[in-house]
Image 1 (cartoon, rainbow, N blue to C red):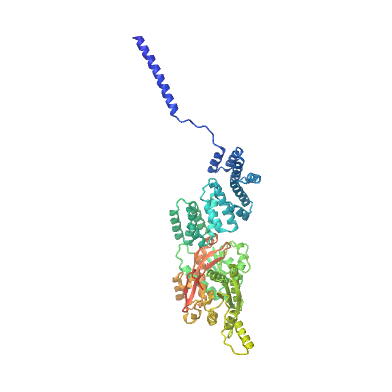
Image 2: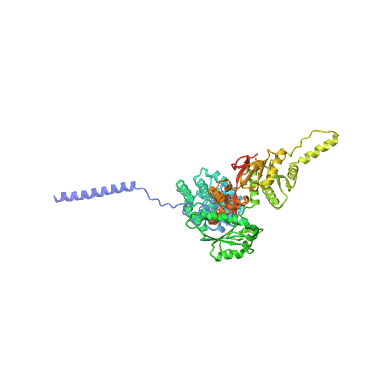
Length: 622
């Protein structure tokens, strides 16, 4: 019995060992073998780029190139150069590019990208732009496409080619790479977009790529809101709903903070105007406009107003206003007064001057802004508008005085800048028959009559004659006050120029509808401020007529000037430093350049039955 038990114990042990062996075999055969093969240098380089470790990636690319054939070696070397540049080692990158003699198409692309990046870094922006734009993005990796887009965008931005810059910088955000200074890239993209006109924004707002279209739609939303904070917040919220994961979402907080910092909210405004002398009436009209705007200001932060007569020394009036608590200044009104402030070393408070300094750069005066109703500014807009209507050969007519010279010079300079031809200029002076004679000379009617007289003499007999005007013009730009315009237009019609499009500045309109007199201006197109026609703030227009019944017609525009001067004050910094910003004023849509000079966009009107009516800016005028 003992032997039998011992036998079974041995048999059980042997059976157990057999099962263990079998199970172990099955287990080891079903378990996947652990890979111990190291990653290739090329794969390591790609992994390092994904992590933003560009210098490590560059070294891995160089290691990979050592074990590659000549064609592949050149590509890997140049990929290393791009990675070195991204990591900040431009010397190592330049050495690789200088040694490259490749003819391989892809390697040549990479070499040009590296050259363009190097040129950009050393300040040769136009050369960098030219080289980078030659690089076809086909077959480039996302990293390489990112380099191309950033180089082209940054170089174009510096060169002032904002359309090219905006498109490529917007594209660069498609490639979200680690280790890139995203804040600078966001700011540069926004800066380029802020320089674009509305038409350019509209073109790319429908781009098929949502990253690119999102940037342009954000700029459209921003511009459409003007300076109204609630409208801006609503617009940005709507954009963010549509583009929740867009790269620009990271910039919205910065953008709103910049806007808030830019607002000027003075507790007291000093208004410095020449209330005595030749400018007394004009100053009173501006003052009344400022007061109307102030009384209508329902904000919780409405400032105190204090008025000062500028006198003979504007700097003394400015210093007095500041010493008495003014945190912003409106005025002065004269060119010399503005020049005196522009010549000061520093201005301790923001100043909205109501004129431009003669021959003085505004750029040097950080706190000085300029807002003016300049006839030259209107003349340039009139010329530009006429040109957009398809006209190219123009006749200029204006009075023989300093004012007329200023307008005709502005007409001529703008027209020729746009590429049009000024066929002739004609001046007129006051006197019997002078308007008729001026128009005859301008249209070559006198030349036609002289030819008829010569023919009569040559033929020694009477001949029938009908004078013919010149046929080489398709538009007339006139500089005229209302009385002069009412005499010029009938003369143009009399001498068969009624079908030639005629344009003028606001000076041709007295400011109040008078059909009995202005029917002679029928067909004339002119630019003016929207307030006079109830297109902006009709309540203030009605109030002005009710409370200032005796205000001369010529001062109504200055009243509106005062309204806008007060209302635009809080947005001056924003207008200057956020160029997309527009202020929807009663004198026009206001914008600012980077020197702090405000510009206004007129509305366009045509006389019909003696009454001005608004026309669409895109309507054809033949």
